[in-house]
Figure 1 (tube, rainbow, N blue to C red):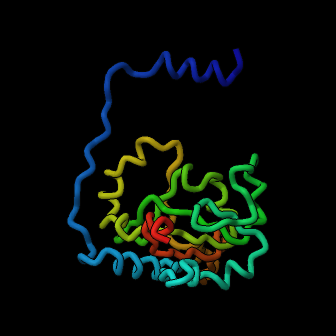
Figure 2: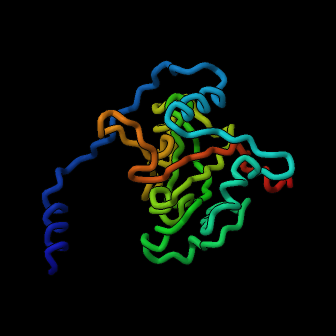
Length: 201
């Protein structure tokens, strides 16, 4: 038996008997108004991100300049074809040269300006951190008011990986100067695009 198997076996044998359900998450009064889209956009802006409206003829018009300037585009959405196939990636370091990653969020949180991804949306979890720029498709109908409402969503219980992103990477450790892109993506742009927009053409 390997050391790993021995440790896991010991944990299983010494696990307390009984059922220990998680506590019920209370629903607090949201600290946002009724217009969840506007509230989400305002808070995302405060965190260094931005919302771009899709164009009439080109849904990616708000980020077209960035896409056209990118050498490596990794797309995890059917609305855009990139030149790096995430389904063919075998190791996280294979996405370290991605200029722009395009993914769809499961939902957004109006109170914090956050978006949630699971392993299904990212395909390669590391692309959410190693890409230089992140373009996020978000259905406006998928914006919930606050974190408590978000935690009631089933994605947290059925996903092997779930992560909330709130704007681009940032740090202000050195002399209080805010720097974006220090440990992760340099920019995060949300396109408010309904899930069935591609089907409607």
